[in-house]
Image (cartoon, rainbow over all chains, first blue to last red; front, side, top):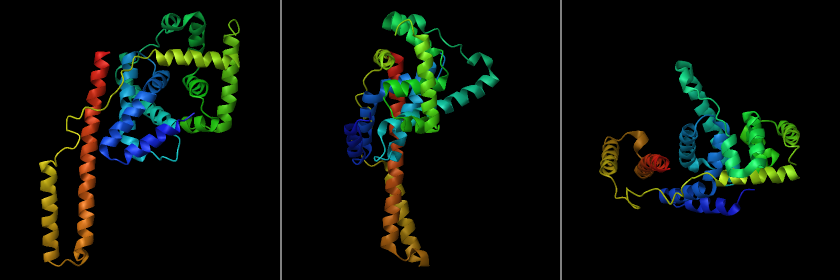
Length: 184
Length: 103
């Protein structure tokens, strides 16, 4: 759920001008930076350099867009919508570049060893199941399971119908339960 | 319910494992309260000179000096703010690159 204290703090700081904007951004960086970075890595495949480049773009867009943020709207969906739009632009640009130079398209990394190291066997299996999902479904799973967003909020971020989100989430859960039936 | 809990734990582990340094603020290389740049002062003088000329020549649309002055002042303020934001974005960009390179 969105933290009202963050929204109030940002409202207050934005009213103070340019320096307040810096402090508001620092708050966003500290509270949401890792989450946004992870979300970006769910959308952008390839090596970490691509995630980092795109993450940088996203954070700059958020900084530039702080004036346009409407305080009567929840902060988190706005941040993730900016991130998603920025990632889609990044992917589009990368596809155009790849058309000129095919070597720019990296192969999807094998994340399994890293997952197993960090989280153990169960979470390694979870990671593999998530990697088997489509990019959109992986985002839906993250926004729902970790960020705890409402279907209506996810629908706005993903630019989908709310009922479509519900249907896809049901399918995702079914698929994950099937993949992880040995563990759950 | 177990699936939801497992997924939440998995994501928590992954997100927490990200090595993202804390950003303690954009370096204020331009100082917290920067002096008015020369370019802004020159712009302000040019605007006031243009206003004075326009009023002196009696252009009908520019008769309301106070209103026009307020408008020009606001435009100058907005232009100044845009410049500040632009410079901060550049600083931020450099800051993120520095953080990334030190990872």
